[in-house]
Image 1 (cartoon, helix red, strand yellow):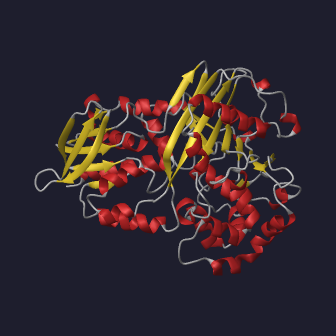
Image 2 (tube, rainbow, N blue to C red):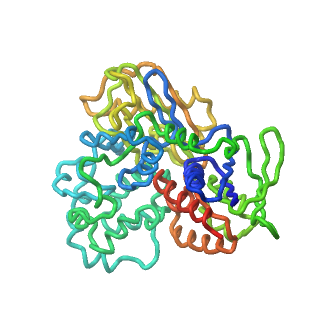
Length: 498
């Protein structure tokens, strides 16, 4: 019987365990143990259900174009739970600050944008989001094919450099940087374009012009989308249902909550790996396994592999970003008006800097109008908004207690929504009937320039540590579908490896 240790009970670890259990049911002689240091499985995925509200304490869905989360949900019997985002009313707002109005006002992104690339140049006309120079740069980009192709670097570059080459500084500051910040919580000047925007790199190589590529419908990210699907997908009862269903497919004795893996060591003989653990009750143990799948957060992964290969540990991302989420639920949506659409983003220039915070700057990273993004999130007539703090602001705010964090979030939201378009501005918001606060310390590894090369070198080094595989969001993607896909592939390889 082959024994596999899965370290970490987030979505990657659970997807790997599910795959092992599936193979075991088909007759493969394999079993797994899932070690989770906390008292619950699911990692950042957590759903709070109260008073008719469905509140996500972590991610609220996944990108529909990546099929692996949907496939897994269907496999575990959740096909009827799948729901799409309300794309008919999809709109994203940017908090636009100026020297005359440092607090900022919400300005809608023009229709037809894929990240920072417009498919319809006429939609730029009259948009207050861009000045004349930025619109001119957009209009000129399709005619610069030869120049742009010649300028493609042989090496990796930052998202900022990539965007500047195509569209200029204003597009970077007002669109590209806040969009990437909302997904990765990172700095566009440091993020690797090849790691976080591979589809756009491919578009550039093929077409030169990103606008021409988008207009041709050739971008890999959307080529296979069916018109009836939404850009995002979630579960009607919340993503926590996927965690619950995955756990239900596993033998109970495979699950080890409250158990921290303190070290992994190579065995001289017999099973390849010795896994040393300690429980919350300070009980220690050591068990042998044929394979180890590390599905741990970045810092824990580095700690566990450094004694095995210090150089490999140094190839992991150096930085990770923190986030703080605050969800507010209201019984009467009419008393908490928001502009139509999915939510708003705050450009870095409008966020508080690392040093002396500007009292006029907004601390928020983003906000989602949950009941407008997905159906079935609120009871009839209700409203739900989720506010996010990121980076240095999140690190500072996370030290406050929950009531203080909620108060800060309500103040920041009031400052933004009171400056919304006239049809959205009304009286002060009432007291929420439910507030959910979650802290995500160092939860988003930063894919810095050169990330893919470093990960390739890391995995090449790990080939010498037979039976050890790294999973999680520090390597090949932060989204739920990527984590599931990589975990299931690794589990199949570990179970079949001789």
